[in-house]
Image (cartoon, rainbow, N blue to C red; front, side, top):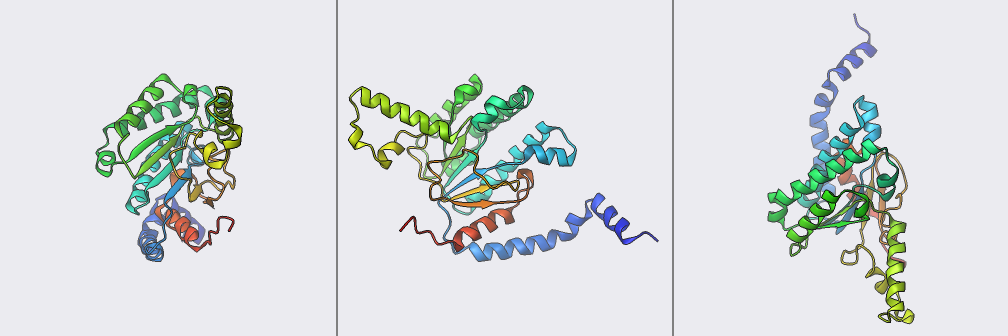
Length: 272
């Protein structure tokens, strides 16, 4: 007679464990939704989708397969966000450091995925039906000419859409954004377009990549890391942070619902 541990191992190996728990998972998901459905919902959710490489290593597949799984998860999670009526989302697709320091073959695979995603957005009926405005931010010159071209095309196509907005950060760094804004301000002062005495937070914001987007209410990061890794440093001053232990390809709707439930329980005074 097989031991209990062997039986459990067999069940796990055959993927039966997930099937057995599926009905329980659905009930729990429904219960979470009932808890959050009355709101308030965050107006703007930003996501740091971390853990694709570690997920690939855990699953015994190639790194690029981990990134592909992460790309598919992005599309799924964005649909969940729109379904909840949340109007604005920002995705940390690639950091500036990723674009400079990742191995060349990994960077090339990531760039190909981003190109694929931008092409898909251009032809996606859902973007047109929901009138989702797309904004691409970051140091795109560190990516590829094709990404630059596609980013311009998708921004132009959706320029008059809204109020739903999807911001995609590519080769982006929060410190770099602040430095670039400071350079532009200095140049305008030298050119006589701006008086130093006029500079305040609102003026400074107008020089950021996200000058026309409200700050995120909620930032979600996966993979168990509890830091924001140079993401939206200026914009996140009063954002609520939520960290998920699972790797990005494993992110579930219940994880999103839990993040929103946590957001709803917090008292946001904004320093008052």
